Length: 363
Ligand code: PEP
Ligand code: MN
Image 1 (tube, rainbow, N blue to C red):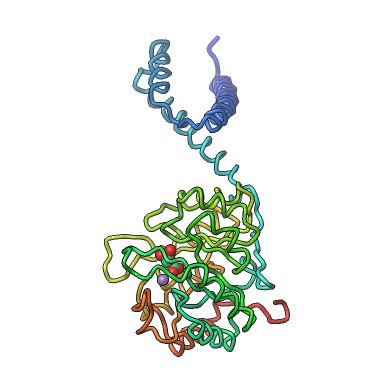
Image 2 (cartoon, rainbow, N blue to C red; image 1 turned 45 degrees about the vertical axis):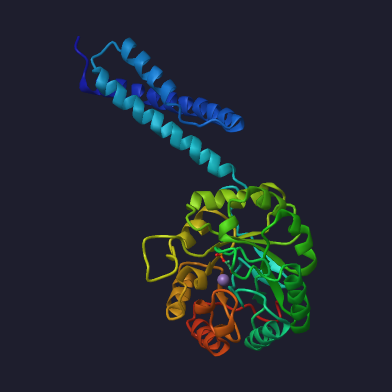
């Protein structure tokens, strides 16, 4: 008696269910293999093993599917399994949004970064003198800004350029910050200086040129103060997130990310501001994400639209360089705003409705 269409359909459904069950069983085994490979530090994709499996399957293929079709189907299964292994790995990263769905909010002397409000970090490229810092600090305080930047260790492209005042610069930052009631952030370039930084500053900056200085990242992971990690000059977001993971896995979960532009063929800006990095990093990690509009553009005339774009894309804060007398600045003279220019930018940002200021009572 010939089978009815209904019988055949029911049979097909049963087979589908069985294939579905087997595919998922296979995926679990494949993820277990991925975990072992992760621990051994070997690549997940093994082209030799994949070829051996395909050869074996085509040798055993009874038909009616042709070998080429079998190969195609199984290659897709292998690809999906690899994808799943990678997703599982991302899920395991400490900085990943999948690991911690809620935002990490970092409090620095009462200033909350990564929550409902945004932060402005401003100050000179380099710390040069007490007078310079005091003039900037006074202007920032008047504007209600709580965090001042200033580089004491400057990783310069040329060894003949100003290298920063070093530890003296950190001490100046502390003195002036205490005088004006500000928090400070400064770049540290050597692992041996991380512990020292805790005495003088409130946030350690790891610069673009050191984003993959793994010994520095590991040491920053032992620090008791937060770390602001800058995206490398040509770093992918994957590399950026993994650099942050180095700090987190070494014990410091108070990490903030900052997009500062990447190197492209474009010459009209110093770097290319990658706005897409903001929503992507917010989506993939639970860390605060900031944008340095100064280094990403290297020019002063487009800072306001770039800052607005960053905030509209979900940035938790903006960083900008400000110098009281930028003509005499010892580094990055062309891109630093003077105090009236900064006041104008700040007015533009606060009146845009995109920047939610933390109420001072909360600070
Ligand atoms: C800086 O912030 O002064 C600096 C050197 O930035 P970057 O590391 O992004 O070049
Ligand atoms: Mn600079």
